[in-house]
Length: 121
Image (tube, rainbow, N blue to C red):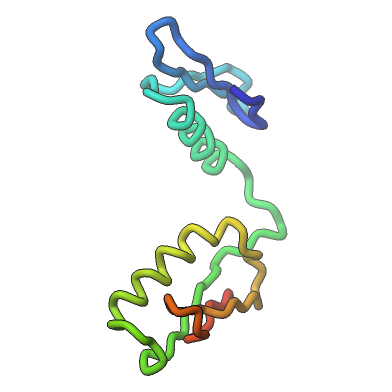
C-alpha cells in the first residue's frame, strides 16, 4: 500500500483490509467494518478526512456547474448525446480546474462544439 497523507490501511491475516485514522482527539480509531479491497479502505479514509477537515478560508461554500448545450447542434438523439457528455465530464472533473469562471467547451460524439460547461458561484 502506498503511504497515505491521512489514515492507515493494513492487510489483515484474513486477506481483508482494515482502515484506521487518528482524529483530533489523538486516540487512533479503526473503521467499524473491514474492506474487501485496499482501494475500498482508502476511499473510506478519503471520506473520513473530508468530513473531519476544517474548512479553509479560501473554500467556496456553493459552486455551480452550468451546462449549456445547443440541442439543435447535436447529431444524434439529444438524450443519447447528453448522457455521453455527462459521462465524459463526470470522469474529467478531477482534471478540470474548479475555479469560478472556468469555461470548458462541450463536444458531441463527432467532436463538434455543442455548448459550454461553466463554473459559477
